[in-house]
Length: 187
Picture 1 (cartoon, one colour):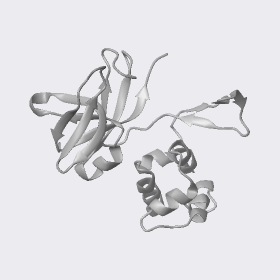
Picture 2 (cartoon, rainbow, N blue to C red):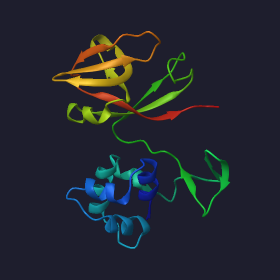
Picture 3 (cartoon, rainbow, N blue to C red):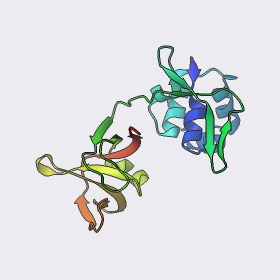
Picture 4 (spheres, rainbow, N blue to C red):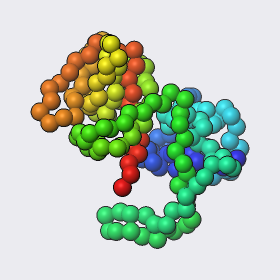
């Protein structure tokens, strides 16, 4: 079993210590590092603890034998494209159990026509972690609101729709929200 813990941790810009402190119960950065490198056996218990600490489904942390991977050719930063120091691959994104999608029919904000936005469903106790993120909010009669979560006061959340000149919308705590986690775009 090949672990993708390091990939996911780095994609979320977290240090080993950050992940260690987020574990329940907390552990050490050294232990997380050993789990990442395979120096320590990644049991199902550890897999679930690390996944919870990273805020992902445990399946995201595993590279499966039948899962296609794409070899990475270079790294792009502010100085341009550079060769890799060691061989790396990009894995197909996995679909978490509570994910939903949104298709963009006409451009608005940073989203372009044809984009697919993958959203992770969250419950009210998880709304605070979605502040300043783009979210989808269900409304009565099969309607939805999509915009930036800018605040929460008591049982109400404040959303700023993405269109130019849009006004803040206040919604009494919905049953769930979908937080944008991945953008799929054809170039």
